[in-house]
Length: 264
Image 1 (cartoon, rainbow, N blue to C red):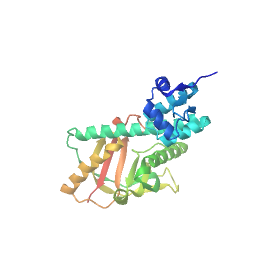
Image 2 (cartoon, helix red, strand yellow):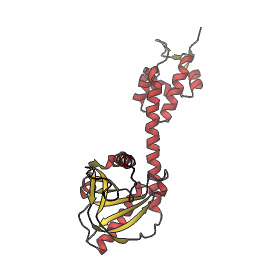
Image 3 (cartoon, helix red, strand yellow):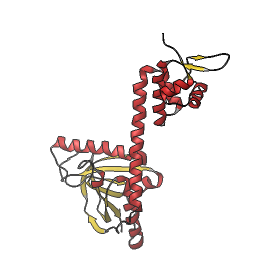
Image 4 (spheres, one colour):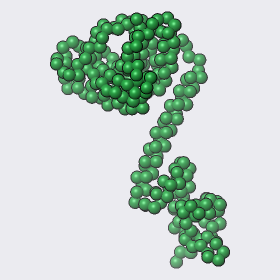
């Protein structure tokens, strides 16, 4: 027969302090097997050690107590609940790493950007257009370019230039606006395809952003400041062209993005 142990002994078994065990009892998270009605002394079954170990680790992962209670109450779904929490933590860790790296780059003395001027002739493209929020734009672009490159492959055609996106002024002002993902094609490739579009002729001030998209605002700031000082900006969509992007490499540090600012 298994003998229940006192709280002091149980704390040694599970590495949770007696104070913490009392708190978990009070909130109904880890209830002792026996509570003496006269003395209030708590006794725990050794079988409860596994739950105590799980609680300790989940708290170390900053899982909220309410979620831990749900995990303990439904043993059959523990793996699913833990997987969801770990996925959230991994996503948060990746976001934190990106922010830290971005802050370090912001602190580093960056060399002045090189601004070139270029006039674009009308360009036939295969495109997908939508109204997109800033928070959804990365996922939307990934899906859109997958579809665009898939369509070209089905046609047996190759891109005639770097893929890109145009972003309306509203997208920046309101965190939501019209975005066009495009892949240049040779004239006549698309025929009457409704996804065919011709980007209009424009003159641009152009700078190349080196590195992940999360830092692209730094190049936008430097290029936009240059345009404000030396040119007249047009209220037309800004064009990004992905010279080296996710379709070329898995390393965001190797990305090269042309930012094209429309000027008169």
